[in-house]
Image 1 (cartoon, helix red, strand yellow):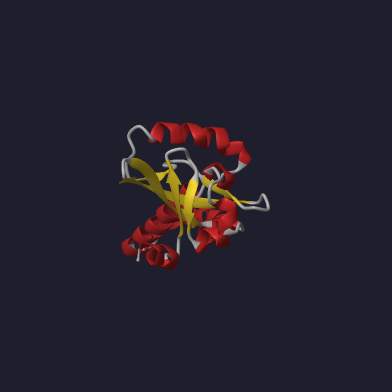
Image 2 (tube, rainbow, N blue to C red; image 1 turned 135 degrees about the vertical axis):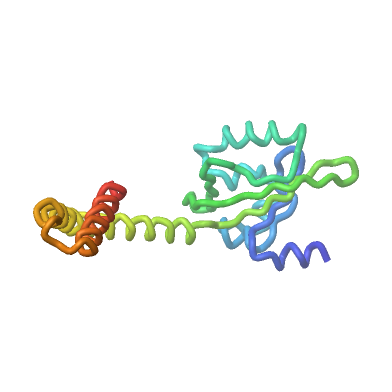
Length: 179
């Protein structure tokens, strides 16, 4: 039943022993990382970590073992997995210690967040482009409203002068908050 549940999980799942060796992986791990299950079992979990981050990962693993607790890995940092072909991809990792027969195992859940990161980049680029494209006309509008407010306020009805002042103030706020 446990094996069926692990295989049915849409996220990658690994079980690691206290020495950092992979003792179980699900098919999603095979899909994410490009390794066959047989290639991973018995290997160090470091095989899934980019080479540039392996020493740091080993230190984190060493500090986790004495007092393991369920947690998300990499709070405040970006984490990456390394595929068999050497390419890297952004991941989220959750860790859950499991004690069985006096032995410590860690169940890791690995989620490929490449699509989410891509969408965040596209959104940021869109906001930046729209912001840039609106700044020039807003600056012109703000300047024009300022001229009108400065020269014609006393000749306008009070309600119109108030609306002009509000429009000018809001335009200035938008131009200055965008920078």
